[in-house]
Image: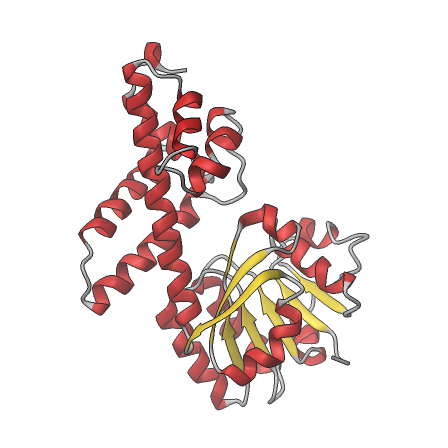
Length: 296
């Protein structure tokens, strides 16, 4: 692509993702409202810009790595990104937005001749750093083929999962499944400790047995038992994604008793823990019910 790629949202995941595109030889203009995030681009090959209108005017493709639909909507419609883009431009929303609002943004952008793909990612900071993310894409197939060379620089899996909004719907459902597994592991480890079983030994057996899941493999020893609680994904964002899944399932009329219970527990944890904590601190929330003498 001859024109530069715009990349908006330069947090712990967005910054390395923008850097991968620059390393592949693309000119990349990076924007973030936080000065520290722009300053952190030094040496990455990404050019920091403060003027969003200038970025929109220069780029035919703009990637968004923002936390939610509120941030995306503000950027597009209040801060002027959509108004600054030319007909024929492509916006790729790689954050975790609400699928219904994504469909509305797709409709509104299409009226201006602008394509929108929703292409949220799974894999966290670690897989953003090594460009091995799983990317689930909603939108028109032609727009995806235009974006595919860029997305393949960011992820090991790029899958077209359906029409506009489908990527964001599947991302919310994926995180509901992930959060459910994490909660089950936390409660099981709490019970193991109360019974006098070393939680590290319990988790090792989970990983050698049918209880193995993403939490037992990549989070328990690394972030929970170590006490670092530093996976890079906040509890508030996980709770938000579960609520998105909950709303989707209610709207579709599918069974939702379990997602309701899961969403309520994650909301309780968010209220009881300090603001901004990592989602792996659910372990600390659950262990609040385990007597200190029984803990490892």
